[in-house]
Amino acid sequence: MLPNRFWDKIRITPSGCWFWLAGKDKDGYGKFWFNGTTGRAHRIAYIELRGAIPDGLVPDHLCQVPCCVNPWCIELVTPWEN
View 1 (cartoon, rainbow, N blue to C red):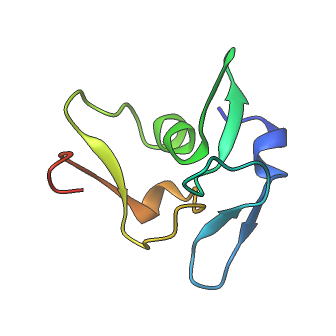
View 2 (cartoon, one colour):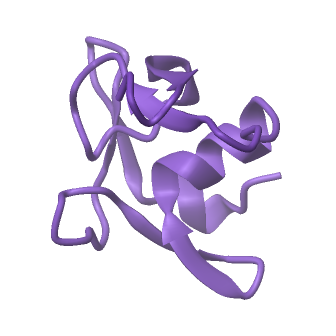
View 3 (cartoon, rainbow, N blue to C red):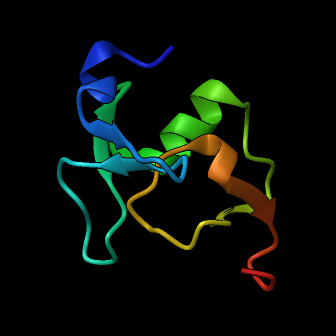
């Protein structure tokens, strides 16, 4: 379950993206401290709201917006496909 402090850091857009408003890494992906470690916010949202990311797959933003953390804007693909 995602804490309230996660939800405080997003803005839902009319397009359906959830823009991350807090800290981002050099590639524009949101960063979030969760369960004792810092990770990419979109990965954390995906795992917490949709389930595990299987080995060999990576999240790919269908919306092409790196700061989007909406797990339904993400599909799991191979690194080659990404």
